[in-house]
Amino acid sequence: MRLTGSVSASHPAGRPDVVPHVGSGEVGDTEILGVDPSRDASGLNVGRWLRDVLWDRAVVCVRLDAKLTDGELRALVSMIGDLKDPVGHDSDGNPLRYGEERQIIDAGFVLTDELRESLGDVSFGGDDLRPGLFQFFHTDDSYVEQPAGVTVLHARELPQGGGGDTCFIDMRAAYELLDTAQRSQLIGLQAVHAYNNRCVFPPRAAACGPLEDLVDVSHPVVRAHPVTGGPALYFDLDRATHVEGLPDGEGRALLQSLQDHAEQNAPRYEHKWHPHDVVIWDNASVQHRASGDFEVGQPRRFWRYMVAGPRPEPFGFAT
Image 1 (cartoon, rainbow, N blue to C red):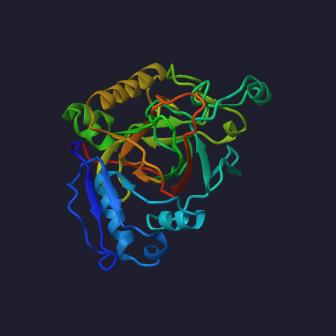
Image 2: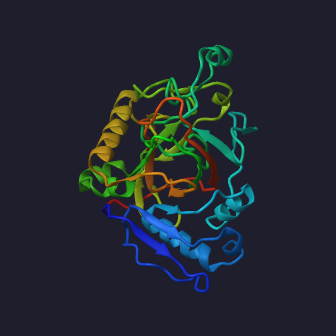
């Protein structure tokens, strides 16, 4: 797996089942042209084609000439899978809503002193000044039993001066780049995730507030992809608390070392946002982070939908 340059994957309107050559197993700038949700969502070919590209490349960008309506974006998301309704459970098994289907993600929003005082002890875990800005690598939704399989982000407003790129690292390659003994030692390990991990991986800030009632969950450190079956490292240091069966300090040191390894060695792709882009990524294959290198006070606003995913399953074969 390696990074490549831009690859345009367009399909003529009359031939929506054309599959472009995108480079097997590469994470990079795969630009999709010619997708029209109002036309293509009702058929099977384009959705199947789009999913195949996504499972292979892990990150794709649908480049558009104009913003989508909510209905059009929902139709595009449905080409990947079922829209996720963000409902988890508390420790008693009761349902607990932790978001809406369509979420407004504003990484440029500035937290004023007045609003900070009104929020009290509530924290979202992002940047202290811009709480919607998450500049550490992470994976979405890992603190619930069935994390989102796919995230779909549609640009609504971008910083006028540029910046605010989104960077991805390939956690499939991160696993493969470990030596055989390291890979074998990780098979079967489970990391516990919580909405509030009590800042056990500084300098990452913990989230806190009413959603702390969500039950803690365990996910395999080496996850089998739900479609391809291939392995990838899977955890989120914004949410992880410890590794089951290991002393807390040892388990946290292991997860931190794996995160450091991924960030230092795995292929990465930095997406430079264009107006109206829809970027789609596979949470079972990559981690991502936002860049805060844009002027404070500038908007960086998206609509986000998530695609429902299964409970992560462990990869069971050491290689």
